[in-house]
Structure formats: C-alpha cells, structure tokens
Amino acid sequence: MTKRALISVSNKDGILEFAKELVALGYEILSTGGTKKMLQDNNVAVTAVDEVTKFPEILDGRVKTLNPMIHGGLLGKFDDASHQAQMNEHGIEPIEIVCVNLYPFVETISKPNVTWDDAIENIDIGGPTMLRSAAKNHQYVTVIVDSNDYATVLEELKATGATTIETRRKLAAKVFRHTAAYDSYISNHLTEEAFPESLTLTYELKQNLRYGENPHQKAAFYQKRLGSDFSLAYATQLHGKELSYNNIQDGNAALQIVKEFEMPAAVAVKHMNPCGVGTGVTLEEAFDKAYAADPTSIFGGIIALNMEVDAATAEKLSHIFLEIIIAPSFTQEALDILTQKKNIRLLTIPFEQAKKDQFNVVSVEGGLLVQEPDSFGFGDADIKVVTDREPTDKEWEALQLGWAVVKHVKSNAIVVTDSQMTLGVGAGQMNRVGAAKIAFEQAGDKAKGAALASDAFFPMSDTVEAAHAAGITAIIQPGGSIKDQDSIDKANEYGIAMVFTGVRHFKH
Image 1 (spheres, one colour):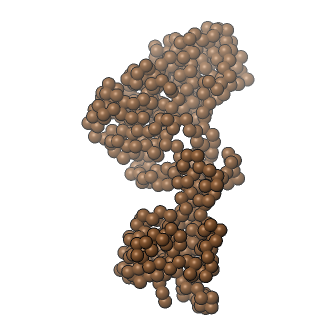
Image 2 (tube, rainbow, N blue to C red; image 1 turned 180 degrees about the horizontal axis):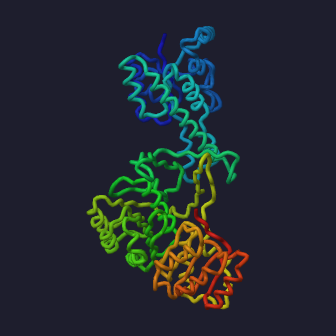
Image 3 (cartoon, rainbow, N blue to C red; image 1 turned 30 degrees about the vertical axis):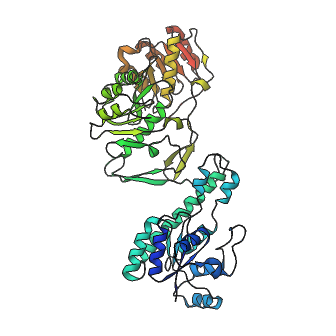
C-alpha cells in the first residue's frame, strides 16, 4: 500500500524540509495550489489533489479538497474490513499524514482598513474540514497543524516507521483547539451584538508561571491575540526576573489607573489597590508625590508611569525596593541606573493604545461575568453642587483627582486627595465610614483642607461627620441615597462643599 501524506499550508515555514524527509521515507505527497507549486519548484515530487479526486478546483479555489476521494482517505479505519471494502470499491486510498495550516484570517483582519470581502475570502473551509476529519481518525492518521511538531513526527517515523498513538492523540487535540480558536476569531469578527447568545473567547499561552497567587497553586498567563497592545500581555520586558501571577495582577491595576491622566503621573500599587498616586509638572515631581502619599506601603510595590523615565526619576526609583516599573519608555541613562538592580522588572507598553476600551471578563465558579469597562470620567458626569458652598478652584482639582482614582479602589472605597496627590486610601471595607476612617488615619494632618472622593453614595451622614472631624472641606460622591438630604444638611452645617456625579464606581 502506498503511503500518502497530504500537505497544504499557508504558513510554509519548514515545510520544504519536512516534505523532503517524507519523500525520503517513501511517502507520496498530495498537495494543492501554492504549496504544490512551491514543492514542485524545489524538485519535490508532488501529486495534485485534482488527480486524486478526478475533479478540478472550482469557484476560485473555494472547492478543491471537499471530495470523498480525500475525506474517505482521511476517515476510513485502516483495520476495519467494511471500511476497507468500501474504499476499495470506490478506489479510495488511505492518507496517513495530514499537514495543514489555515488561511491567515487573523492576520488579514489585523491589517488596517481591511475590507469585508477580504475578511470573508480568508475564511478557510477545506482546511479545517481536512484537519477535523484527520483528527477524528487519529487512531490511524497523524495530523499536524503546527510546524513545531514536524521534528517529533519525523523522529518517530524514522525510529519505528510510524508515530505513536500518544503522539497522534496529542496532535489531534491540538488540531481541535486550533480549529476552535480559528472559528472563534471568525465568529467574533462577524458578531455585532455586545452580548451574543453564546460567547467564545480565545487566548494563547504566553508563559507558564512559577506558581499562582500562592506557591501551592499552579498558574499560566494567556494573551488575547487580537487584544490591545496596552496590556501586560504585550509588554516588552527590558530587564529583571520573570513576571509572577501577582505581578501581572498588580501591574494591570496600575496601568488602569495611570491611563486616567494626561499630565505626568505616577501610580504605586500594592495588592491591586493604589497606595499612592501623584501628578506634577515633571515625572520626577509626580513620583515624589506618589511616594510621599504612602512611603511605607510603596515598599515592594509596582510603579506605573505615563511618561518616559528620565535619569532624575530613575535615581529616585532606584533607592526603593520595587517589584516592577512600567512606563512608555526609559532613557538610556535611566536604564543604566535601574538595571544595576538585578531583579527589578522594567516593562514598556505603548501608551498610545491606552484608550482602546475592551470588555472586562471575570471568572466565577462555572461561568464568566462580562461587562463594559468603567470608562466614565469626570468630564462625562452631570456634576451638581448640592451644598450652599461651591468648591474653590483648588478643591475642584482635588475632587477631579479623587474621582479619577476612587473608581480603581476596591469597594467600599474612600480616597482623600489634594490637587496633586492622594493623601489617604481606604479600600475594601464592609462599610463606608470604616473606609473613610482608614483614609483619614493615613492622611493625618494632611486631610485638613483636602477633598474626599467616595465610590458610592453615603447611606447616612456619619461619613460627613467623620470627614469634618478629619478636616475635609470638599466631597465628591454619586448621590442617590434616600438619605442624601441628611448628608447635604450635615455638609452645610460644617461648611463642606459637596458635589454629586450621579454615577457610582463600585469595584469588587
């Protein structure tokens, strides 16, 4: 019986060498289109698929392998008498090896200004069908979709004349993962609904991690192939140790906060909450303020900066133990300073991609929660001054800063700020006045004349009372409680300016 291998690939990396090795092992190569021409041009003996099917390629190549002479050879059981009898009756020869990769749909839709017709024409039909047929019949057929597997297949063929069932099963599983991902890219590209009746998400392995949130938990990091480059998944690491699970979580939290600012800004994050946020005329000044906000918690933290890191800022960063520094870029002088620290991770991310909003996806036991990102900012709010006194210009600046930060703090959340930096952060408390007390304690005397931002409304006036006791002079909150008037009255009593935004910022 003639040994046959069917080869039809869009990505031709390594395929010539692979085909030559198969021919040397006694395989007849079947092929189509560009793959066939490339092999022939390199003196590899090839049988055209239409010679096997006795039917020409039609419809501009849309139909060429969708034929019983091909799929009978892929799906027939080699040791089943009935199958063999039917194949003999119809002159169908088995195909032992299938090497196929698919039309470059993802690469096509990633191009700028791609047309609808171009996307549609790059939906592969025959390729996935052959892969699925061969993978279903992996008991007998070796199916390869990844050029990284060529060497393994050749090694086993040379050693014993056949691949092992273990290898064929692994390759078949990879095929079904590959075709499932391919279909998901197509369906997502064609889907216009925000929340369709079914949702298929595709992520590709970026790296295995040493462990997860704790050392006893295994973990890996996956990336979206069509995701925004403003992501830890697409960061360029210039220096330092491999990222850990917690590093990635914290780094992502820092990025989401720092992208709120146009002016030079520095964000320090610990356990996914900001411990210090600072802004300034220069990046160095912004970092000074972020550090001063909480010089204790910043130790071992993650820093995100929205401007190129210069030597002056790097010098100050180098004096603190930090896990990661993320920025759009680093000057050579800054790199020379920071790379003297062996383990610190230095990452660059293209901040020009920062405004590309994507859906948030969170896993729960047995399901996923999907939502739009919380991109609602101060400029989007219907701001209402609800007290007798309006905020001063400086208070308005502080309120805007607090409102930008508080939506990134775990609820219940209270943030105390002046016009350029956070002074106190109360995060993740079971009641709002508890969060406020933590923020006031951290701010200390700096709370006098400062502003307070709350992620949700005050259910009673006790938070206003605590704010007055701490010295707060302006408050920003969503409003919407049935007891809003109690808080307004209390603010008027103490001469506190209070504004409502009409929008809450819960973060669980």
